[in-house]
Length: 290
Ligand code: NAP
Image (tube, rainbow, N blue to C red; front, side):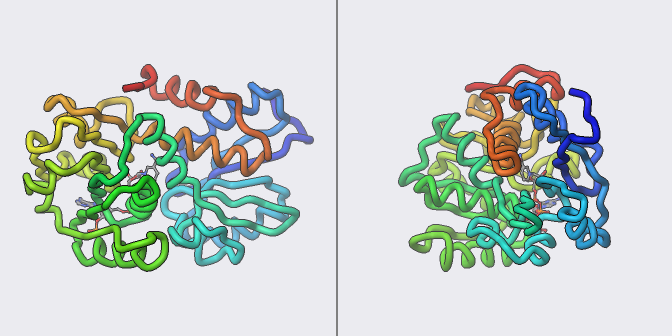
């Protein structure tokens, strides 16, 4: 849809940002709804984040998504955070409400919706979350909400421990999370108990291989979920599929967090399936329903 001087603007700030698939998803929804709005990627460096956030009300930008490396820094800058952004100490949605910036985080809810779509029932089961950054925190919150016990596995075990402690004190009704080093991914007793294993690290994207993981010891109903999404099967998921396990990349999470963000920005839900179809067209593959 063509933009004009009356078009309202929504945006994403990131560094890098050119690769972002969010503009394709959001603009497809605007076109489908016939809304005179547009979604624009802005390359914002770390040192410019505060100034870029201050410019949102001045420019009349309706809402902004934040991606790497801004989510945690924004949570320290924006005063008005909702409970989820405060708990995750990260913001991926900034909403301009009559000149006041409100910070929210739709990553955990996006993953939760995708796991429900995938019919991954975690009640009373074990989930293993690999990583201890922002994506891992969102995954941990989701798994706890879905009733799982969680073991956080990370290269730096101290960070995993800190994350587990943080949620035991705040988000979780009880101490629901434990922590281990990456060697836990070769522990057959732990692996055989897991209903879900989430990769919340860039391993396989920034490294040629994923960590050593004993796929054959996992339960037959174990779902492997990679927060990374790409055109091809990821390094984490490929051996899972070869071992006959269910596998999903993070494209569904991206769609769901995007749909939630769209509703926050525009106060109207995107038409069902439009953002997903736009994403999968860009990714050049069919919808991975399991
Ligand atoms: P982050 O905050 O930078 O955390 C990175 C984590 O990965 C840390 O725990 C780090 O371990 C670990 N790690 C990094 N490199 C490693 C390596 N070579 N070997 C072992 N561990 C390594 O990142 P994030 O924001 O959580 O994002 C993680 C991934 O999730 C990214 O690929 C991101 O694109 C993806 N993501 C996807 C969605 C979606 O919608 N699908 C949403 C959010 C994030 P240490 O603690 O030891 O440094």
